[in-house]
Image (cartoon, rainbow, N blue to C red):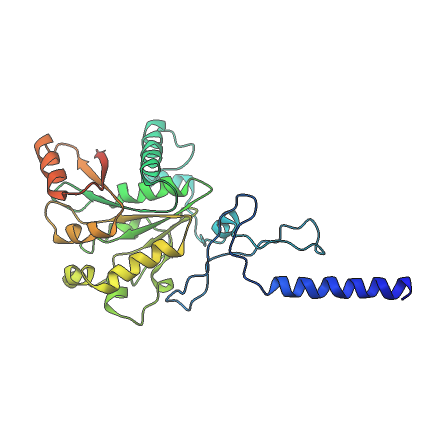
Length: 293
């Protein structure tokens, strides 16, 4: 065989090997990367992972890795809040003048992550006050996770008796958690909205407030939270629950959380109430308190 024929045969052999390798699913990450297997989702089964060519040239065979930096960059944020708009809504942001507030949320994020260990997790926030009003704290807690460029956050509002989330989000919202649980034709994709904060998405509570207790107790609700946790390996989930002391919903939602944080409204809650609430929780999921002014 002359040199030209040998060279062409070699090229053909290389091309055939590349085609075979591309057809295989590579489930292990190379050089310390993380992987995510495709998850059969209720919104059509599209996997939430990205194939990344790590070769130095197009002609090199490259492993297919789950790259969180690429995946996170795909999170939609069509109407981002400006710094002035964030400040008006009391939403935290990097470089904000009140450094103490920013540092407090950063420390809370660090402690929750440390307690959770590797992987994503769900933390439930519930106020110990007598009225709704914890959504801003829950939103800022989720924002604190989203400010980390290596993760994203999902705020799931499970307080159907409050509509305050709409004032914190930059896009109109419609269906939410209770609508998804009540109607099996709803998809997860249809209830997730961009928030206006980079790498933070939100799911509103929905419109079925009167039957929230029964809906939160259903198998469909368990499936929703399980799928949200399994689908996104780099996404921390913050659940905003109704006030713990006066609502049955918060007690039901506790079972879906890995950690629980209580909000303490200024001047409304005594030390005895805090102790009684932690005892009533009866769980090692309690992770801390946030004092709200």
